[in-house]
Image (cartoon, rainbow, N blue to C red; front, side):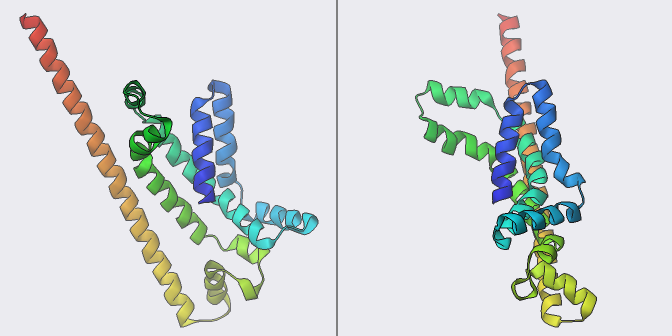
Length: 208
């Protein structure tokens, strides 16, 4: 949830920024995906030990750093494909800001929010390194337990849980692809309908 919020806000700022700042902000948001997880896991360990921050809060920050670039990329595409004429028409018809957000803006972004949340969840589930550095064995996460089970012994319960996670991630990925395909088909249909209306109106005026 934190990664989705950070990625959406960063994508909105990136869309509204001018060209040099847009390039710089996009690079800063994508940078954590290019840095090895061990590097900022060590940084989070030093941050937590020196400032006395709870390791669980630091772990949430680390997972947000891992997942935010992917949420940012998806939400930037979604914000770039917004129809600004819908928002302008809603304002011209007297809709309030909250009504415009919930009934005009949010339905357009909902497929991209779902895909971004699915990617963020997938990256968080597949990341055991942060938990290994920040948490003890008594409060280990499921990815950490799965990683330790592969290294130090076979536990059927952990293997079953890991298999369920893999199935869940595959289902989320499939649903995300279906949502994007449906969104693309609807966009193509709208383009076809608008082009058909334009050709009809052009033919009508030429005939007159």
